[in-house]
Image 1 (spheres, one colour):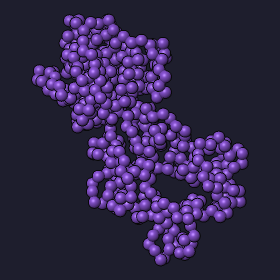
Image 2: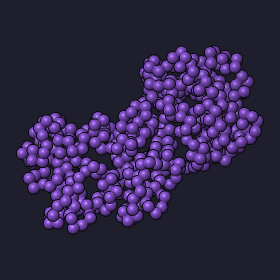
Image 3: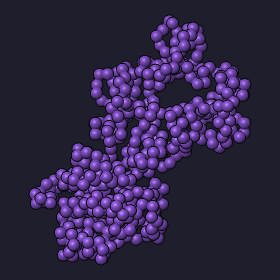
Image 4: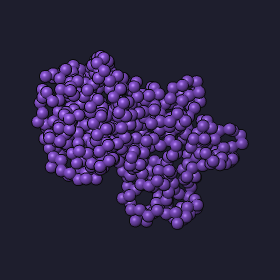
Length: 471
């Protein structure tokens, strides 16, 4: 313990600190004030044992190595990582990103003993030699992980909670100059990261590793709420689209089906245009145009009289500029001849088929599951056969993007994306993505048979191991 104190005080030790040059980062997703969240660092359930095992097996040689643990017994490196994570309540993902950032160990196809011995960069300061006799007690793969985890949980975190700053003065809300750039840590995790590695470049590399490995690829139509920000987004075409308000969000989403993801993970998605208006809201623009907001665009009312005909009132109008709606596709206009611009459920006494009619186009509901999912409480109006026959026949009504479904005859679960079934290959993938079992909808086989199967969802795309030159 004396050695640690001397190192910390006399050398301003930042375990893992390697000499780095200043960096000007142009990655729009990287926020130096919030490199990782506290949950990213301390969520011990962020990766279960099987996920850890499969992840390492998809990378370099670490999954196959035996290393000497602190009890003197040789054990699989996976088990050492798992033990340390559980002992110190550290997210296994963070330990993996740390040893990759320090020694490229996770993706190394042939790690050297030196890289293993200083896996987490612990006790190696800018001016220190790895041969320094004062730091040999920290040498070894298990020792490195043990001391690094202890330093985070029992030193840095306790210092922040008790004194408001780490031993090197890093604190939440305290602005500091790092590599020529002002940085103000927004959370404990970021203050600890700059204490451990006081360089922008090193922490940017850690963030990039995290994005490459752990950012989940959500299907189109998924609605995700970031943690801890609580900001909600629609995932669409590889972008995250913020909701302008909670009202807009709730007009499109069942609150029980909104997923939760780390703000760090969501930072990998480019930010798209805001989802500004609730579905079926009426917009009056600065040019005097009146639009009905539909699920896939905007529809122009031919006149205010037509708007009133369909029951819309002037006090429901939302004032906006024409630019505010310019990114929405212009759909068929609403005229006197339009039937059900907001959609309606119709059927005849001659048939059990229920139709969804919108804009004079009818879409058959192949099963009552569609009514339960998308039209709960909506009345079904009985009309004459000739009325139904008078509407244009459209495609059958389809399951919405992001829906979780399974058939009645098998246990496989799928996520709907772009009218395809994307298999979810395991409970591990399902739960890591943030899905909830109670949201899986059982659908008749004949309905699912009308969908093609797409690519299975995966937690991470296996990357060919990087060959790292040994010293």
